[in-house]
Structures are given as C-alpha cells and as structure tokens.
Length: 301
Length: 225
Ligand SMILES: Nc1ncnc2c1ncn2[C@@H]1O[C@H](COP(=O)(O)OP(=O)(O)O)[C@@H](O)[C@H]1O
Ligand SMILES: [Mg+2]
Image (cartoon, rainbow over all chains, first blue to last red; front, top):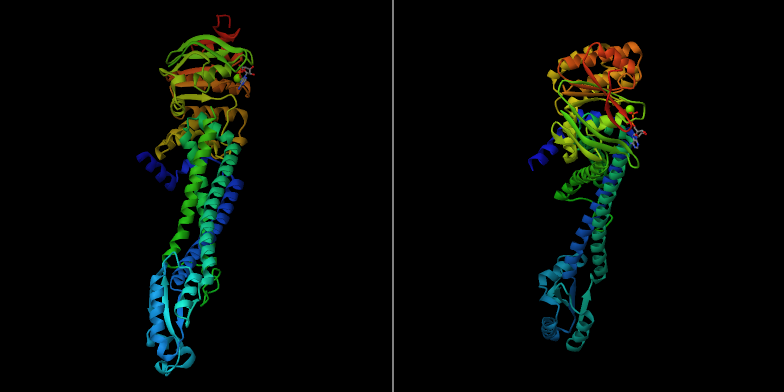
C-alpha cells in the first residue's frame, strides 16, 4: 500500500532522471496527445447527451403521471350527479392513483389567458374538469372510456400528454446509449494508449537494453514510459474536455422549448462530471501503459 | 566473488561451453582469451547474470543466479561493472549523464556525486567531453566512457569485453593501465581479449591468470604466452 502510494507520488512529482532516460519520442506522444483530446471531447458530448436524455426522460415521465383530465359537460341540474359517477368510476379503475375535481378558482385560472380575469365561471355552462393522476403502471384508457360512456355520457377522457410516452422510452434508451458510448470511448482510449506504448517500447528497445545493463529494475524502466503516457493522456484529455465544455457552454440558449437538442447542457453540479473525464482517461492510460510495459519487459533478458 | 561449478551453456542445438569450473577470488586479475566466436562474450554474460547456465551452477556474490528474480539481477548488476563489447549508450544524453546513468537508475544521483563524476571523467581522460553526445566520440573515447560508466558505482568486480577492440595500440595500452590501476586498488578484474600482445604487455605490470577457451571449455593457459 505504502509502496503504491510512493509510486503514485513519484509519478506526480516527476523523477527527473527517469523522465530523461527515454528520448523524447515526438511522434507517438503527439498522437497520444491528439487522440486523447479527441476522445475527451467526444466523451463530454456523450456525457451531455446522456444527462440531457436523462433529464428529459424524468421531466416527461413526471408530466405523464399527471397527464390526464376528465371533462364533464352536462346540463345544469345533472352536473353534480355526473361528476360523482365519474369519480366513482375513476376510484374503481386500476392504475388511477387519485382523482380530484378542480375548484372554480383553478378553472378560472386555466381560462384566464383566453377570457381575462373577470370571467364569471360560476354562471357559465363550462365543463367541470377532473384531474387524474395515474400510478406508474398507468390505466387502460380505452376501457376507462367505455365505462365512462356507459355511466356518465357527458364525460370525456383527455390524455393530452400521452403522445410523449414513446418519447420517454426513447429518451431513456438514448441515455443508456450515451453511457455505452462513454464506455466504448474509454476502451478505445485504452487500446490506443496500449498501441502507442508498444510502439514506444519497441522504438526504444536499445534504450531499454542499456538501462537493464546498468542495473535498472523493470519498475524503473516501466515508470519512465508509464509516466510519459499518463501525463500526455491527462494533458490531451484535459484540453479536449475543456474544448468540449466550452462548446456545450456556448450552445444556443434553450429558451422555452424543452427538447433534446436545446437541452444539451450541464446544470449546476453536473458541470463536475466532465471534470472527471481527464482523470479517468489518465487512469486508463496508466493501466494500459503499465500492462504493456510489464509485458514487454518481462520478455527481455 | 563469482564461482562456476561444472557450468555449461547452449544457445540451443550444440553446446557452446561445457564443464567450466572456476572461482574468481577478490583482487585477482584475469585474462580470458580464445579465437573470435569461441564464446568469450557468452562466458562473461554468465558471470554477470545476463545468461543463465544451462547446466551446472553459477554463483555471484554467493547467490545462485538461477534463483534470482529479475529485480535481484538488476540489483546484482550494480555491484558488477561491465564494459560491453559493443559499448552502447543513450545517444540522446551527453556523455557525463551516460557515465552517471548507473547512479541515476539506482536512485543515487545526488549533487555530492558530482565530484566523484568529475574525478572519474578526468581519470579516464574525458575531461573535455562532458557535454558531447556519444555518437560524437571516437572509438577509444567510447571505450573509456564505457569504463567510467562501469566504475561509477565502485563495483568490486570489473568485467571488460574486448575493451581494446576498436582502438589503436597506444590507446589500448592506456586502457590497460587504467584496469591495472583498478586492480591495484583491490578490484577483481577480468578482461576478455583475443589480443595476445596485450596480455604480454600486461604481464610486466600485474600478476595475471590467463584463461583460454578451447575445445568448448575453459583452460588455464600455460606459461608459453
Ligand atoms: N544470442 C545468440 N544466439 C545464438 N547464438 C549465439 C548468440 N550469441 C552468440 N552466439 C554464438 O555463440 C558463439 C560464441 O559467441 P561469442 O560468445 O560472442 O564469442 P566471442 O565473444 O568469443 O567472439 C558464436 O558462434 C555466436 O554465433
Ligand atoms: Mg565477443
């Protein structure tokens, strides 16, 4: 444990000697920098996509739960009776969590945008609205319509947000795909660093032989490579992440429209997520280079 | 220091070296000779653990080489100074840093080693070459830089593989004098060479044992040299 810690500290502090013994191999290292920047940039977008899809699924899901109303229109004298019947039917319907008649004030508030505040709701023959909340499983809308027709002919079931149901499913799936993409990008980063590390180790076979001959341990030699690739990946990923975050930050403002494209952004603490990207990329690079170095060194005399 | 007991080595196929028994006592001076391709380099590799005997045993500082881990072999190499036949350097680092490389990789590179390094570079006559890159050195300078690198950790044993291979007679005499001086300081020295004139030149200054590889094994050469 302590040795691990010491290794990590040495990695961060930068053992000058270990860093210098491997020649500054521009090519593989520059490619590593570039690729990890690109990967981080993509990760930030996948992350934003996942979070936006998640938000959307949740918002729309909540809206769906209180999406239905029953509108009862009846002549003056029958209104109370019909409303009572509807409430009884709703109470007996599986999948309905609760049902409640809107008060006169609420109805007025709903109509205000169209008719102004002075509307005498009580004196107008406007329908009575009943708000229906459903359980997560939902109810059988067609069955409910048939029963309402039979019991209270003046009642009409309105499911104004029903059309969003498949969209919620799609948003959930999109969120999943976003996370899968992030995993794939991570795996690709690991593969890329492994290839680059192998190339660097092969290109420096003579350096490694000299180091072995003067008494360098495998750990020492490995560290020189691991450190280089880990730091380059960290730097590249940090740059890519920063660019990604800026791009997301300066997306055209969402405005009032609540959609997937306009919702592609981080909110509040969600800004911490992309900060993790360079760190995870560095961890992946560290693991990949360590494994590659140990495998190559183990084969030498 | 280093012992061989009925040791043999085979690269695969026919045996190259067989049935060798030898003890390198502290402070002794050995020459190893034999025609090119006889197995001198291979023999030295057995002595510093780069190869493991395929038969018999090799003990370095009392430890059987077959029982050593990779890390233990790395640590052991810090106690044996080797001047390789094809002395290889890190070509991107200046000579001084190459000479100090054993200090660097063993974590002993501290500022107070600078005097030590200065002295050693002066001793091998590379004073003006601190900042030169290895490819800019002549053959003789490379050999002396390799010797300095082999000595920087003050090892007890120095193994030199054809140290005078690519240099003129005068330079080879100079290298020989350096090695004899080291032996006087108490180090165990072994020089592999096919150059019999060098051995004769040494005999006037040091009591050297001459080992010869012939007929796939090790002989103590007679006094006819
Ligand atoms: N890595 C190797 N694999 C196979 N054969 C080798 C290897 N190294 C050396 N040899 C062979 O072993 C023999 C002895 O080589 P070496 O020890 O270098 O001789 P010397 O140093 O006396 O010239 C040579 O025939 C050489 O071809
Ligand atoms: Mg040889």
